[in-house]
Image (cartoon, rainbow, N blue to C red; front, side, top):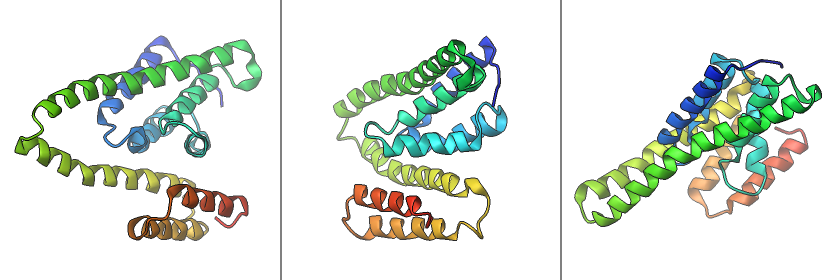
Length: 198
């Protein structure tokens, strides 16, 4: 998939991810549905497969959850340069894509988090601060469910994907009702996927 990005489009990418940074309550993964809409549907800078692969690869790799943003930026830049076979320009633009998306997703939320946490710590006994913290939990859960829904429904073949839906429901139930370690659940899902069962 080859696309070319103008300077204005690179700045738009930075601005969009900077805005998403401020909405990333619960982590950058909660903004994945809007990233998908923006990168795949609205601009066509990456494919649906590149998007879901970026999330899957980053979640399987050790390290911070936000790595998927770097992979999305890498794919945008690589596609802007014409793909992996188009030489140094493609690789340079891929690195630019990583830098643009990562700085945009990290900088605004880091500054906001620093300032807000200092303020909230000074005023931690206020009723409004405690209510805000309690009210954020359902929002984070809803955003995570939206991300899961996006990743599962990317094939748009619900009749064929029923094992995937079943696995999602069972995993949700196990997380909700037991203390089974999440890495065990991720490993089980990966093994079922490698075996071709989901």
